[in-house]
Each structure stands twice: as structure tokens, then as C-alpha cells.
Length: 100
Image (cartoon, rainbow, N blue to C red; front, top):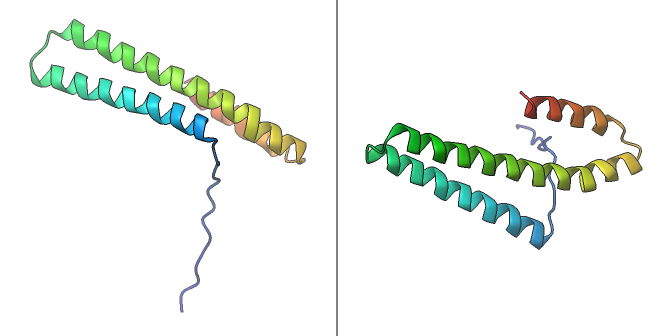
């Protein structure tokens, strides 16, 4: 008989407001990406597409800033208060990845 293993991934319960904000931002970004796809399908001029791609990149960066801020204010602070200092190393690694 095979043993069931627990998932080792962390999870995060979000407030309804935080959840709605993140989902709304992602929905807008998803719409922007669909718009870019349609532009390519319709043979829109390259620079017009590039400008839209830049707008999507800016929207994703803004999403990351909000998510990172929420993460630091909740997950990181809670873990540090609970004596889980390894969360600082995790945060440093995450920030290094975001800055590539």
C-alpha cells in the first residue's frame, strides 16, 4: 500500500479585499495579453505591439510590488515574530530572483 504524502508547499490565506485586488489586477493583465495576441494576429505594426508589451510588463511589475509588500507585512513579519528567522533568507533569495 502506498503512503500518502503531505504537500510541502506553503499556502497563504488572503483577506477578501487582498484576494479581489490581486485577481482584478491579473484579469486586467490577462486582457492586455489577449489584446497583444490579437494585435499580432491582425498584423499590427511592431512598435505598437512593443508599446503594449511594455504596458503589460509595467502592470506585472506593479502586481509584484503589491504582492511583495503584502508578503513582507504579513508572512515575513509573522514568521520573524514566531522565531522563524529563515524567512529572511527566503526573502533575500526571492528579491534576487525578482531583480534579474
